[in-house]
Image 1 (cartoon, rainbow, N blue to C red):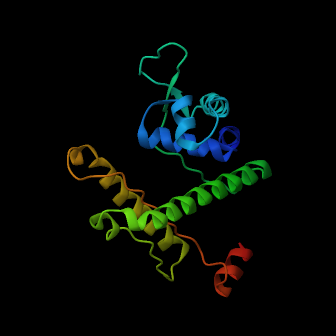
Image 2 (tube, rainbow, N blue to C red):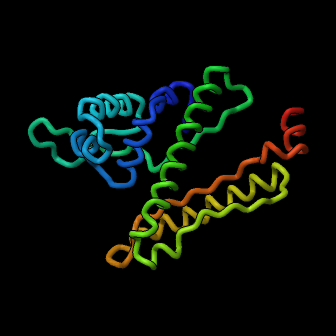
Image 3 (cartoon, rainbow, N blue to C red):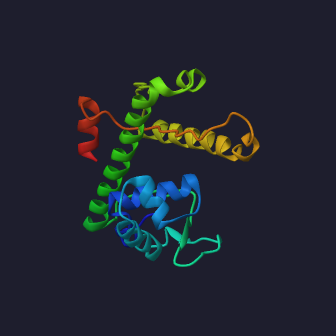
Length: 192
C-alpha cells in the first residue's frame, strides 16, 4: 500500500514503467530494461535503485554475472487509498501517482489500437474498450469495484494453468469513476 513515504518512490513515469515490466516479464537487468524502453542503461539503473530504496523491487535470485545486477518486483501489485486524514503532501503525491497510472493505461490502450491490424484474428476479436454508464451510490460503486477485483484475481490464479496453450498476457483495465459532468455527482461530491 502506498503512503506518503513510498509514494515518492513512484514519482517518476519511468519508474512506473520499470516496475510494470518487472511484474509482467519477470527479473531483468538495467541494460535489458533500457533496451525494451528505449532509455539509457544509466537512467534505468538510477531509477531501479530508487525503486529498490522504497521497497518496490529487490535483487533477484537470478545469479548475477559480471557487473549485471538482476532485479525483480517485490510485490504483485500496488494500491493507493488516500485517507481523509492524509496531509496535503500525501494527497498531492497520490494525485500525481494516479495521473501517471492513467497515462500508462491510456498508452497501453493506444498501443493495442495501433497493433490491431497485425494481431491474429482470435486476439483482435476479444479485445475491447467498453464504456458502461451506470447510476450508482458510493456503496454500490464500491461493491462493483470489489466484485471486479475478485473476478480479476480468479483469472490471475489461472495463469499457471494456461501455460503451454495459446495463452498470452492480457491487460485488464477497468475504471469506476464518477462522471464529473453529471450535475448531481458534482454537487454531491463538492458537498462532502
